[in-house]
Image (cartoon, rainbow, N blue to C red; front, side, top):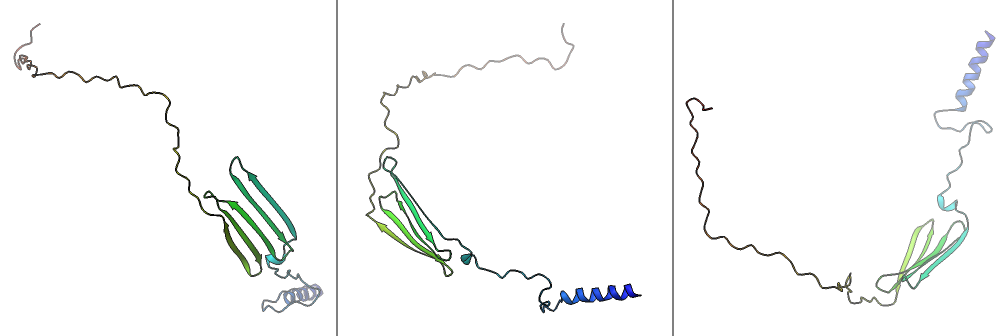
Length: 154
């Protein structure tokens, strides 16, 4: 009898700790879930940059970015095919991503160049000859039909 009472009391304590009405359990009991922390507050401070400039390939681009753990600021630039440089300066924080785009230089469109150079050899002349016309029509050939009846000849 004592074990039944003891078991019932344990069950009541377990039910009280996990109440379905949402009231918190007494301090020191249960598990407290960590508070939600937005992703912009979880960042780590950083600072990086890179630049690629290759005159032979006509490449020029780069990126620079810094963060204090909460706000990220930076810019990046790229040489566009029309000769201008596009620069994007941005800030990213709890308000979102905000960017300003600026262009340097004037767009230039050079004359179109042929994709492949013209061949440096003379193309051969065609060797095809037109056949001579045939006048008149050939006479039809006529064969005697075989007999449909009678004994075959051997």
